[in-house]
Amino acid sequence: MGRNPWVWFSAAVVTATVILTLGTTAAFRFDLDVDWYTGAGQWLGAAVSVLAAGTALWIATNDRKKAVADRRADRAQLEADRRADRAQVEMDRRADRAQLEADRQAERSQLEADLLREAGLVRLTDLSNTGDLHLDYGEPPPTGGEVSVTVRNHRVDRICDLDLRVVAAPPADGDAPNPAAVEQLWTKADLHDPEAEDDPRKCSIASDDKLYIKSRLNPWAEAVLVTLRYTDQRGRRWQIDPDGNVERVTDPPPPSQPSPPPARI
Image 1 (cartoon, rainbow, N blue to C red):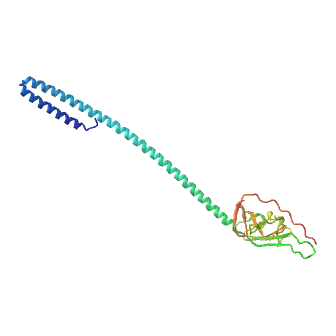
Image 2 (cartoon, rainbow, N blue to C red; image 1 turned 180 degrees about the horizontal axis):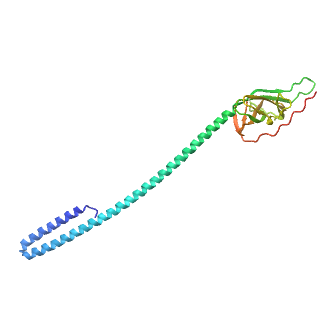
Image 3 (cartoon, rainbow, N blue to C red; image 1 turned 135 degrees about the horizontal axis):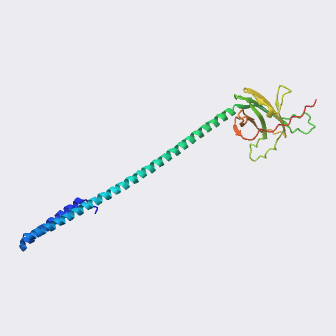
């Protein structure tokens, strides 16, 4: 049924020709009259008519089926194209969102790098770590000492809430015992104005200015690690050390440091 209708039509013509030839041969052999030819012609004409009608119906039916199949294929292709378009639009949206997020992340990373570079413009210089001198050899050696450092602000804005932290450095030799923990008895800023507040937390350093800070230790350690935490004008908290390392911290500013005892006269 799937062959070309012209093939079936040709087969019918050949069949009719064969039947007509056989009928003619039989008529000559059996001496048939004109009535037989008339009847055979009518029968053959009717058969051909039926065959032609069937062929036409078959062609029409196949055309209809083909048209229905084509419409179904067109609808399926259209639906597939729509799904592909929707999928492509969704992929484009996801790619746009991913690119936007990547751009924002790059902007945040660049901003963080700029802030770290700016925070590193505060430097710790002139670091000094001195133990108490013992002049009377008849007494036990002193255990205290003092650490001092100069804070230089090369930022364009003022910094405040200064917190100098000193801890004993771990031993270079892994087998050596850890040093005793040091305690900061007090920390103060060395100001020219005797009436000014010398608590570093209440001090601020203007741009291109400096501040000298010292802290009393007990017991004193020969090797110490010194860090300074400060707050910038935007409220960000930073930690720096004499080696230029910079880190952003989230701890609140430290409480006011105890004041040093008055000097004996």
